[in-house]
Amino acid sequence: MSEVIHDTQHEFWRPPVAQRLTAANADVPEMVEACDGCSTEFMVGARFCYVCGSPRVMPSPLGAAGWTRYFEFHHIKQALGLPVPALVAFLIGIGCLLATVAVGFIYAVQNFADFQAIQFWRMEWLLAAIAAFVASILLRSTGSARK
Image 1 (cartoon, rainbow, N blue to C red):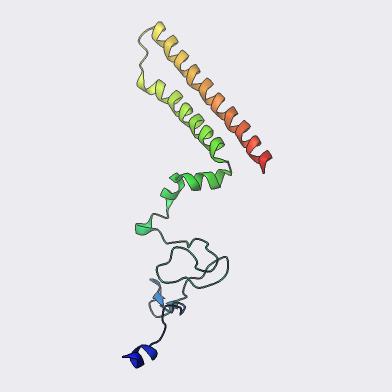
Image 2 (tube, one colour; image 1 turned 90 degrees about the vertical axis):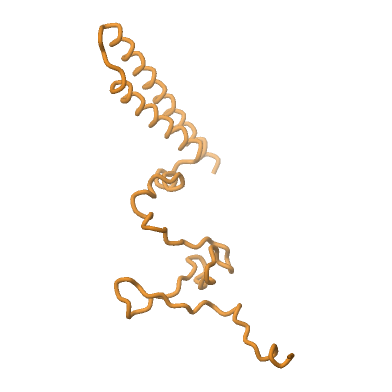
């Protein structure tokens, strides 16, 4: 029994050698993924590099890497380059602007008093948007000063 275990190969520590075929050219195998940080090949099914710990960029299921990724919070944060509090204030300002536009579509003007009320609501939403944008600017400047 000991001679069987003694002759076994230790396959756990071998680098992955699986080759995937690309959809465009099924005859040419694609290279195995390597870590961007340390150029070590990823273990099969690993989400992180076992050497440096950096995350593995996984392909999105069902083609979700398209336009829907722009609605993810961390992609918006990365694209705008804002810290989280400033980004939240900015998104609140965008929501207030959308509410300003929505007030005009939801409520219909039947007399002059309705017109004044709708304009007053629009001014309130615009003031809230301005306050949120100013808060976003102030939170951005204090966030960059801390670094």
